[in-house]
Length: 261
Image (cartoon, rainbow, N blue to C red):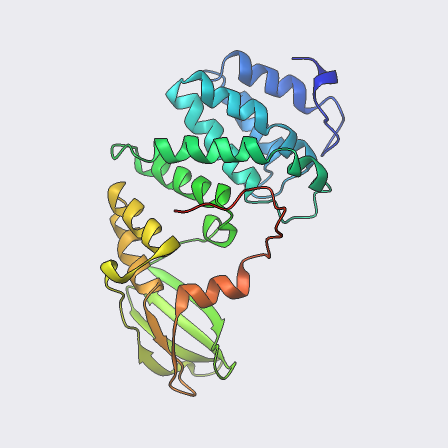
């Protein structure tokens, strides 16, 4: 690999990324320090990306193609973190449009990997997030999924009042948040029947169960269940409303082609 092959015009000196990527490509399963440096350069703090990040995607794809499991999983995780940052101010829109086929191939690769029900939990969760990023479900790729102490703040789609939805060990309810009195006018959530889930929610739940991520699968049935507005008593699906409010708009010429779950 030579610097002239790469459009490295992102974060840091122009020659900073290629030597690190070269080390990873040379020993993809053994140079832990190089992988750490690559994460720092391409997905700083796990989320911040630049044009250089997207320029690395074909090389990460090639690592997956080589077929060595540990390196492939690392490459898919990093590629997913990069694609999850597609809506940041990275200045790489034209470059990203040229990478649609690469990202689509990465999506197929991670989908195949997720058929393995024996993945270690941390790897399974990382690849779960990567698949969501490649499939343009950015908000769910980056979600915390804290179903022990989780809160989702949304607007009621009917009366537009702010609603706090709690999903945790202390309770599962919708409420109005009062800074002096805490969560008031609580209403119990209605858990979704897994058989009634469809589309993205069904894929997330089915995949979580297949991977043995039981707390995630359980939490998703509450997240995609129904919440009642404390003010107008109308109900809505928490996850759908949260995504509507937080998922960035995808243009028709976006980097990842649409596809079924």
